[in-house]
Length: 375
Image (cartoon, rainbow, N blue to C red; front, side, top):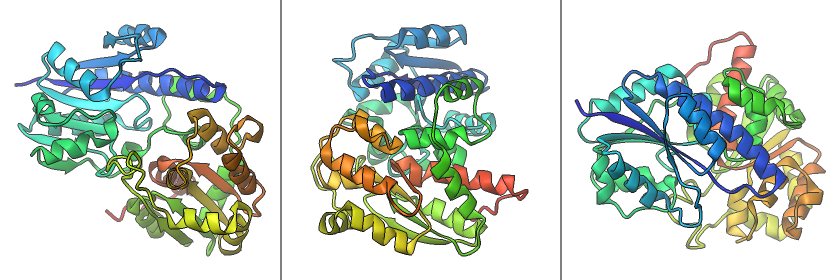
């Protein structure tokens, strides 16, 4: 039987303090998931591609094969993945980003591995729009696509190349990944976190107050929660099936990165146009009139406004650290959110998809119930 190889990419060049904090947690997530992968029966080898020497050493101690390259200047995702396929003569691949699925269960990994290993031609994804878990067979299908510069489009390209696409089991633990500090805040409140990840989270002084206010609202009958951005329909279904709350939902620009709309400056947002017309303060005043709390994927607004922001600025906005935000428009927007009459949680895609799902599921467990799963 052909061999299945798990391939994880984790690296970068964190510059600001908040980026280094994110990297420390990603480091823990990567090692916790590598430890799960090496114990998964149908996975024959585990490969880590990284430019972090300490992560490489820790991964080797787990029995992971490390493909190390310290030169990030020439990094190209698709080229590196293809090189790994040929260098190690891979038959089948389970690819995941270093911060993907920090809550994934061993049984879920086993199911994904078994599906991939038993299929001659398949591409499994955890998200049809922008997956960060992609399993595919055969590995040489990488030659059928234009090599992408990021992993968001890998699943779509392999599907377009002719591989039958299969969606992985639709669960919070498979869909939640770590993109922004808002995701760290949610993760810090959840059980099921791996030991290395928990240790990294415990070193941070995260303000969880706004997220905890949202948690309490789930159990308040008739409370109104606004979800804005690339909101997952699955999350909305799950919340409606388990809580007596009213969702004010505005979902737009799902798949904007995977479809190339960001790169082509094609992102359009009705919410962003409303903010431009009223100004951030009046926008949040209006939002406070119709909702008890709001979770906002701000990357849609940023892309529509074509703001050229550093990752540090985006992350400091999520944390509400105004004095470290260098962009004036983003600082004004963030200040208005902090001064709102209701709790506002700012973040990225995962905040209104896998992160929110994991948070809502945890509220149900803490309430002593089993979740009603509508799909």
